[in-house]
Length: 283
Length: 283
Image 1 (spheres, chains in turn yellow, green):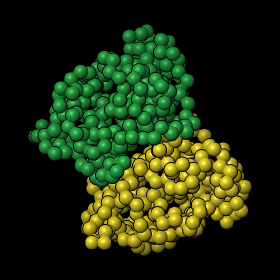
Image 2 (image 1 turned 180 degrees about the horizontal axis):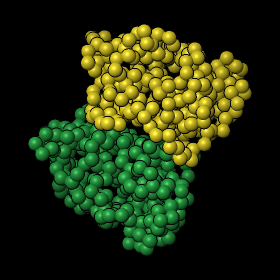
Image 3 (image 1 turned 135 degrees about the horizontal axis):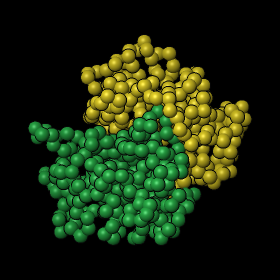
Image 4 (image 1 turned 60 degrees about the horizontal axis):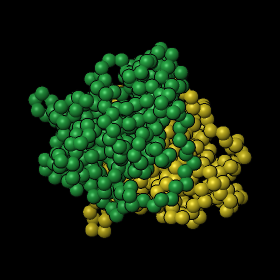
């Protein structure tokens, strides 16, 4: 169960290199938060979730996150971190674990950044029965969507290193915010890939659900939308090729909003569903 | 912060009596799982969540669950239990805590049933801004809906004590399962109240999101749909009067399904949103 801690297994792509964890002692992993996955100065929450997900997948007897609930405690910064994992319960088809990511204060004490509770299983062991009523999001073809290199460039103002590691193509219907004309609808849709061509897997799905601009931009709200809690269900191992991510906010109230994400793979399967509670930017 | 442990404060209604917790020592609460909230022999997961929610609300500096993620580990049975809580982080507007509910094996050792991670705040301190695109579910008027006393009686086969403590009125469009004619749609809707007239509050919302018959019944599947994980966002303190609960399943695949619940209060406000991942009954 230690393949993910062998550097040789994780050097080929940026995402794998930057989510690598090194076993320090049973259940304890050293990690280094890369500056390459930041938005302005904040480390992306989906990238952090993937790091915790990798550590848990190494620690637990089952490989894949079926449902992972993350509560974000304090802002993470690039640099060293330690992930402490705990096996809560192991069963035949599912095992449940907990993990916390800590960074270090100036005096060396550990400061907890995120805590997650997750149930893992083996996606390859699931039966093929599918009785879904879900349909893929209505999205413009990828060649008609906008990347950070286009004009208008749907880039979050300020330097966002993560934009260079993602191949995000935003649906034209959701880029109004980039030209000062937000749609007023709490919708964000994009084709999602990794810039270096790495194919999706359950860990990169944890990044995909939190990698788009916030729906609050299209609601005409500028500024930071910090995640309080993010729960992701991985429902299927994604097929190679670009993903489609559709995020919807229905209820902005009391200074908080939910973001519901669906991730579809190139085989038209719903591969992940997530919901987060986030603080709305101050109007 | 100990009002919920003073019996005098919690004797008036069944729900409060049966979710009462008694402080044993700082962070540790004794509880007794009532047989009054069982479905067949299983203790209802929403009732258990409310118990944990009450203990955390007592332990944390903030009173209301804003987002609470529960992973269900082993089946709970009526009888004594102990809830161990931990303060993970306290902030000005939010505090995060963890709680586990344990029962006792024959040899007296503790067996963990459920673990939750939650962020609490103060619903009364939230601003009034509401920019929601959500609309209440289309539901038949309560007088046209079906209670367990009606014919057809939408009762889960077998003795379910919880049916006597709830005032559930199922939408006629979702009771086909009770007469062997499921709609084939993953939808379940009901008016929800407590039989003894207790008005809703944030804790009873935690019960409401998991108290309806499973959507799998309307998909033509019989049998148990055990919850793996259930995350609930409480968005607003509910107004007095009956609640409307609408549950939707879009993706039944690989032996698992999600249940998305919305709870609306009598003032037409979306007061809670939840999603759970559950095991589908064997076809």
